Figure: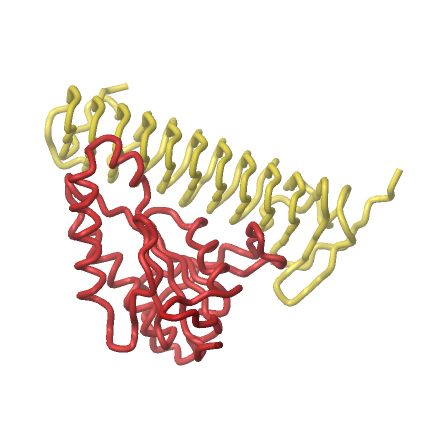
Length: 229
Length: 168
């Protein structure tokens, strides 16, 4: 068995993982060092701790660590609790358990985020996007659906996929879709300002008009529903 | 023949295929015409449209600061002009380098890299390479750069540092 490579985590250091085609797993947990279970020897550079590898890269780091992951064609998994995370992969899926802020992009894979406490920016060309809880969400898909259970605000653009969004509180929502149904659930009693336009689909709003945030939806073809939870 | 260093930018209308399928060729043509008009009205002296690529464009700028300002202006104008019949959700990618001239066209590794960068951008975004950012040294530009990290792109041998550029 290959011995793990470990270095003390420099305070505030960013963990940077790059690979041309590896499946990458980073776990943030209660520890003070950075351990590479699979991958090359970690190197401390001016921009943080760098880890490279091919095939499989697996790293453990202190909880709350900021992470940058770039891979050409592998899946990326961020487990445990991490800080600000930026992830790009050419054609893999991205799974994230808990981060502070997130920018995640993939060419043709799904993106799944359990919790992102601050801004959550996700983009995929042809996969689906699924978010559990997030602050402001900025979500874009080319041809996949979007599901966001509870966010404080959202900007969503999708070419041809359905959108299901749960708004946690009065906030701004802006959804644009060429085709696909859009359903937005809001807390009971919320009275948002609304602008709901569909080229060829039913539009339904269960809320009274008010000034509790603003919900704007524009769909080329597809139904729109704003419903109370 | 290598041309002087400059900024190469690619634009792409996100979801244009879906839009064309949904709305038909006439609306698609109108959207492209509107994009063309806005781009040509916005480009400063010295910059040019190198070529049209379906719903995208390849642009050339002699300096990076002008390129950044112009592309961010373009985003603003395209967003303002977007309508039901022309949803101009445009993304852009930019790289600084020395391409090779082939007639009016520009080719080469730096062009290929710029073309890859736009693939990583979402609608309404401008992504730039670290080489573009390095050109912005005055600190007077009201542009904010957010690092995306080293990004591995198809056909490009080494990871490239990418940044999301936006108005500060």
